[in-house]
Amino acid sequence: MTLTYNEILVAVDGSKEAELAFKKSVAIASRNNATLHLVNIIDTRSFAAIEAYDRSIAERAQNFAEELLDGYKKEAEKHGVANVHVMVEYGSPKTMISKDLAKKVNADLIIVGATGLNTVERFLIGSVSENIVRSAKCDVLVVRTDSQFDDVE
Image 1 (spheres, one colour):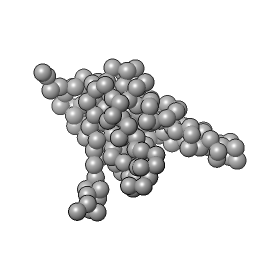
Image 2: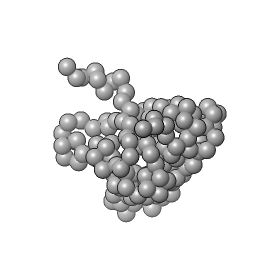
Image 3: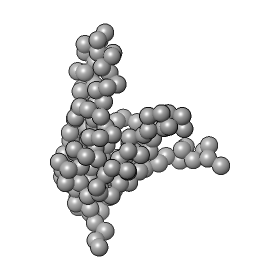
Image 4: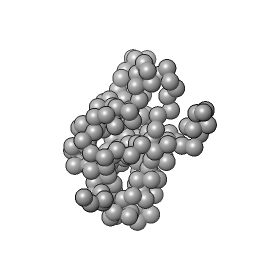
């Protein structure tokens, strides 16, 4: 069994948890000389109702995603990752990351930030990272922040 990764998929959304996942993905990609696939999925369900009142929401979400990914791509390249690909997709992050995108890039590792949801929110809607762990066909690394352990006894 080899402990190297060649195709790493990391989901980023602008959150602190996603930034930590990105930083860890850069270190892993650099050590493994792997290709890093950065993806931002614009959750169409979350802004569908808002778009009825504000037609520019999709365009602003696209611009935000492109700027975020461009910044992360430059940072990854600065830290020695030679192959960095960026993708902006529309849909449900829960299903697209582990099923569609992982297959599309032939990912052997998916890296995501841990959820920021509280217990009730996780029960009602479930977290993206939890869904990815359950449904992915490859290894999944969930990156946690120190603050996520503050309220655990």
